[in-house]
Length: 441
Image 1 (cartoon, rainbow, N blue to C red):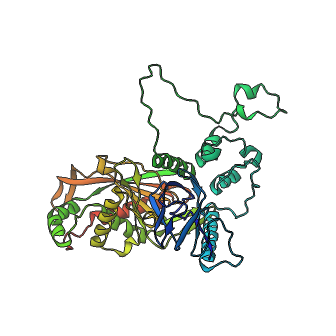
Image 2: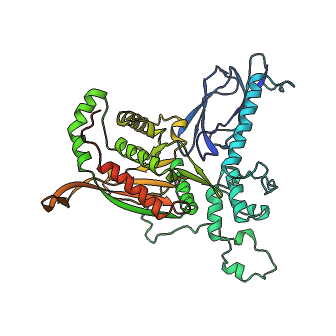
Image 3: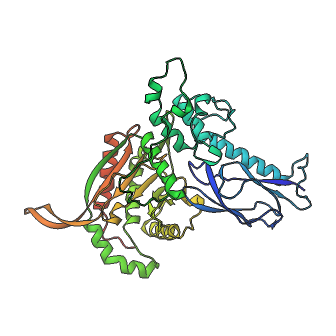
C-alpha cells in the first residue's frame, strides 16, 4: 500500500549521471521484483535497472534520452492495492523507507565524490537551470559566482551546463575580445561578448566528412581532458628483457589450454607483476582528495579493453594480488569477452586502483598513457620485439637475439615523484625478467 520511488542508481566511481536509453516498462505495466524497468547508459557501461518491488508503474518522470543525475527519482511504482495517481500514505511502508534510505545514501556519495558539503557555498540557482554537484564543485574551486555561472552557455539537456562547458569556459575566462576592450571598465560585458564559444573551423575545399561523436566517445574525451587538467603527468620508461617469459608461454600455451580450457596471454602475467610491485610500493596505489592522500588497501587492477566501436572500457580485476596466473587468466578472458559484447556489469568497471593499457596490441613499442582518474598511475606495455642485445657471460660479453619490450609509467607528479615512479617501474620489469620458467600451471 505504498508508492515506491525508483531512483537513478550509482553505477560506478566518478559517475554522477546517466542517460535513459529505453523504458522497457510503461505506465500501467505490472512489474515483479527484478523485472527490467529501463535501460540506462553511462560513459562506462550500458545497464538494465530492475524493479526493487512488485507493483504497477504509475509514473515515469523522465522521457527517453534524458540525462538524469544519480539519486534522482525517475519513476513511481505502486505496490499492491495502490491506485495510480494517489498520494503516499502518511506512514511510509518498509519498501518506501528503504528507497528513501537508498536515495539519501546516494546523495551522500555524490557530495563526497565532489569534495563538497551537501549544502554548497554556491547558492541555489535562480536561473531555473540545474547545476550538477561536479559543476558546482568546479565553480567553487575557480571562484565562479552564481551570476557568472548563469552566463555560461549550456549544451546539456534543458541548457544544462556540463563539465565540458565549464572547462571550456575556464580556458577563455578573462580573455578580452575587440568588443570588451572598447567597453568602459565600469560597464559589465554582455554575455554575448564572452569568448566562451569555440569558433567553428572551416576548410577552403569543403572536402570533409563530419562525424558526430557517439555518447561514449564524448564522455571519454571529457574524462581525458579532465585528467590532464587535474594531474601533472610525468612518464618514465624502462626496457625489459622478457625472453624467458616468451619462451615459457610458447612452450606451455597448448598445455595450458588443454588443462584449463582457455588461453594464456601476456596480460595476466603483466597484471601479476604489477600487483606484486604494488605490494612493494603501496604509495603507487592511492588517490587524492583535496589535500588528503587516500591509500587503497585493495589492489584492483583495471585493464583497458578496446571495443568493436573503437572506444575503450576498463574492466577491473578485484584483489589481483590474491590470484595466481590461472585465476588471473580466467578472469581476464571472461571480462575481455563480455566487454566486447557489452555484457559487463556496473560493479565490474568500478573501484579500480591502478590501470594497465597494452599499446603493444596495436604494434606500438611504447606509449604515454593518460591517468585514469582518480588513480595516480597507469602502465603501458609495448610490443615485444626481437632485437640484438649484449649479454654478460663468464667468458665475456656476447651479442644475442633477445625478446624485449618497453614499459612506460605515467604518474601524477603531485603525489608520485621520480624516485617512487622509477622504482616501481623497475620492480615491474624485474618481476617480468625473472619469471620462473620452471613453474607449471
